[in-house]
Length: 219
Length: 382
Ligand SMILES: Nc1ncnc2c1ncn2[C@@H]1O[C@H](COP(=O)(O)OP(=O)(O)OP(=O)(O)O)[C@@H](O)[C@H]1O
Ligand SMILES: [Mg+2]
Image (cartoon, rainbow over the protein chains, first blue to last red):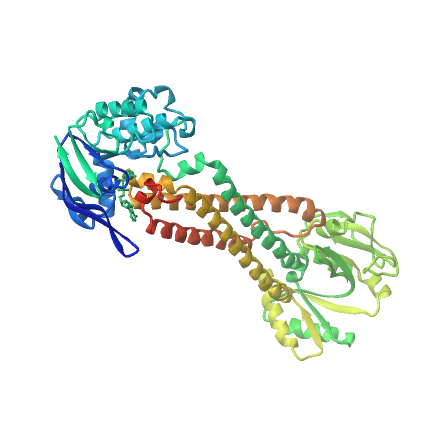
């Protein structure tokens, strides 16, 4: 489904080259849960941005269903992200002036009517049925993160990218969020980066990243 | 809450009234201020036109120095006129005054023979006379409704007299009639004028048969007497004076309004910029989850347009309200003229929305040009 070949991302730090990603090659299969483990600063987020087309690689390419995504225009890539991908970021960012339900539907405002029932079902499954009409500032951190998960799932995406979605949560809540993500992703692949191996209980495959390079692949 | 589209331009504005209202208010105030100032300033030349409008119904002719020349002058003009003449009348005027928002302005009481006086009132559009016409030789006068309002006089009051400031007459000239017309008129009997007012201000009034021809007659007469010992009074002169009188004032006003517009533009531009910086996370998030840059830019531009256009329209409305109140309590009691639909006052407000639009468009484009959603999602900024 997603195929990365020789991906590198280079930052120049006062003229010195810093590799956030170095020659990463990787395949993600349909419906697969891929865990990416690595310490802080190892390049996990960078890899995720490259795979999802949010950042352009310095070298290498990413194929999505066989087509290189970095050849697409900015516009086309945004549309690909909106139609095919779901995102959960490390911080539970929500639009402050929109209700939980509206935030969930903010990925696809053009299809809000069709997706409304699914959005309500998801919020229900995430234990937020009563809070669908609440504004984010009245929700707890964990509740906000669950709204973000509903937002990532509502369009039934082909691939869900999750960047340490449990980092802001305690262990129990973290495990809970992972359960929910895994249960509701349907046929979507889940690519999740974390530095906490205990969050990858359900992963089909785990890769490790160190200083921007993939080190071992465990099956 | 009703489900709203997060990327509809109205959503942010409606859900963030705390930000929308100050923005719109600044624009409303600016537009209101500019339109009101211009309309009020413009009311001065407009007043001049209104007060001296009566001269457009006639041509005034007076010989310089030698009044015995008047009949010959009139004969020459009437006989050679390019347009048919309805009536030529001799009269004697005396100086009076009316009030304006910028102090007292000269006016005249015109003394006429009884039948000329009747003709003159009709010529000035009088539809009805409250009271009666002055008796021959008597210290009596007829004024029109706006003059009565302006000087706050009623039937039986003294118009001119030995003690009346700026409107001297040896006897107390009482108002015996008020003519219903929107033109400004003061008339009395010519015999009273001749017996009491010196030095004589003698003039002739020549009226074209066709009202549409009056200006043509005026223009021709101006040429005809050029260089002779005579002068003509015509409405076209009033028009010209009203225009040129305020040229300098308008230049000053242009500078003031331009500065005001710049200040308001900067203020609103700054406010918009602050609000947009506060929304960087929102923009970054929306872009990261797949909304295109173009959608977001379009949305922010639409928001700016909405705020500016709503502010402008409400500002014009507020100005109408303010001017109406001013007109009611300040202008109408003295019959001062104020044009609520003065096109110039509307025109002067146009640069405000345009400047704000241009500045906000520029800042929005610059902001989005170098906008990186990853930086926002990664919290590397703010
Ligand atoms: N804009 C940038 N300029 C320079 N260096 C950068 C930039 N962004 C990231 N880096 C560097 O790239 C490396 C990888 O960063 P990345 O954010 O991918 O790490 P990470 O594995 O996600 O870390 P964490 O677990 O703390 O989120 C880091 O060493 C970081 O300093
Ligand atoms: Mg990271």
